[in-house]
Length: 314
Image (tube, rainbow, N blue to C red):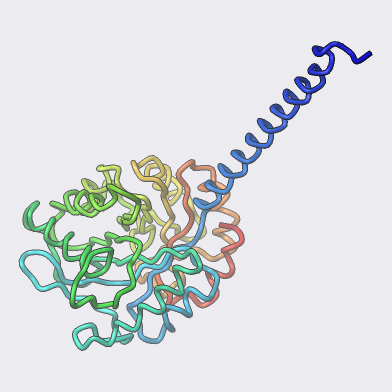
C-alpha cells in the first residue's frame, strides 16, 4: 500500500524551505560582496596634476605607472568675463594649432585602467574670473561641449570625454563658482557623468572656493597643505597640519584628500613631508576620517618616486 499523500509531500516542503533558506543566504552573501566591491571602488588613492611641464613624460606614461587613481589635466588658464577660453599645457602640445587632440588616445588609456581624468581650471597663474551667474553658465556650457559629453567642432583634447572638472581657483574673485558647480552638475540628471573636484588652500574657509564647496556637490576636495605655513607640516612637526585636516575632514564633500608637494622644490614656501614621516606621523591619523580619500600630489614632474613610496600606505 502506498503511503498517504501528505507523507509524500512533506519531504518536498522541507526541501523547498531549505532551498529557500539557501537562496536567501546566497543572495545575502552576494549583496555583501556587491556592497564591498562598491566600497572598494571608493578606495583611497593618489591624485596627480599633469600638464605644466613638457619634461614630465606623457599622460599615458603617468597612467601606466600604476601609481594614480586620478589625473588632473592642468590648466584651462583663461575663462569667464567674455574671454576666449585658453588651455595651457606648457610644452606638451599647442591647443590653438590642434596638436593636443592626440591626447584622446592617452585619456582613453587612463580611463581603461579605471583612472578618472579631469580638466583642471584656474591655477596659480592665469586670467580667469566669473562676473555673473550667466557668465558661470556659459563657462559650464563651454566646458561641457569642449571637454565633457557635449558636442563641439573644436574640442582641444580631441573626442575623448573627460570624467569631470577640478576647480583650482587661486586668483580673481570668489563669486559664482557655486553656480558653475551647479551648472556642471546639472548634466548628471540621467547618470553620473561629471565628477567635481576642488583644490582649496588649507586656511579655512578658502578665499575663492568656500561657497562652491558648501553646495555639497563636490565629489573630491584635495586641500593644498603646502605653500601655506599656518597649516602645513614643518620641521618634523605635524600638529598644525593635522589640526587643519580635522577642520577640512567635515566639509560637505564625498571625499577629502591631503594635497602635498611631491618634492621639496615643488613647494617653495614649504609643506613637503618625507615619505617615512607621512607614513608614520600623518596617514595613521587622517585615515581614520570617514571622508578620507587619499593624497593629492603636485605634480607629475616632481614625482620622482614619491608616489611609488607611499601608495601602499594610502
